[in-house]
View 1 (cartoon, rainbow, N blue to C red):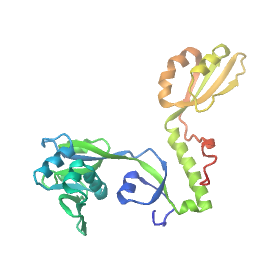
View 2 (view 1 turned 135 degrees about the horizontal axis):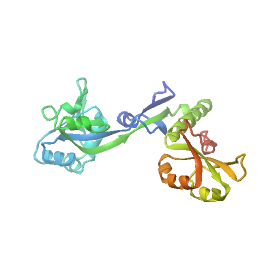
View 3 (view 1 turned 60 degrees about the horizontal axis):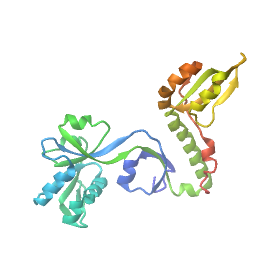
Length: 269
């Protein structure tokens, strides 16, 4: 993507950080959420991975870290205060079957070829792994210690594509459509009938995307109200709706397009 072969793509923010890709993040799609965490055997007398690292290094021991995220892991190690104190600007030693780089063998990061959670304690003292629920780590008797980052899927584009007017317009059209799907997952579309005497009381308590739509019914003194509310608001609103309205209908929208929000978004701000 960064080299311009593709114009648009979807990937986890973790791999953007891992590869250092020079791309533009267009939209957080808010799915595929995972955490990159550190973990070590529960039998180890530590609560945090930083405690393990400090103990090892202060006692002159080398630390073996197994990970698929080599660069993120190296960044994490360098961010720990005791690392900076003991090793200064030295780079952790990153080791793969094909190449190695770095000049600090006291902090060695080994490329893991899957099943990272099975590496401790024989092959690694510490692992950096991706997890959703932590179940796999738990099953391998590992303590999930620290969260390095949280990742979700993002719509991305290479920066040269944004310089092309035609491509830029298509990218923002795609952003609008995908944003509509993301927002729809958080909302509900409700329809209710309400007596005229209760209408203003209902409207004063009804959250809505913008303004609710109100239409008179064929029977005088009655109105139909439809609006979009947050999913979490429905349960809060049920007592009010039960007392003031009739005929509640709830739909799950497929998309919600707040077009005015994107009206001027064409890359020429």
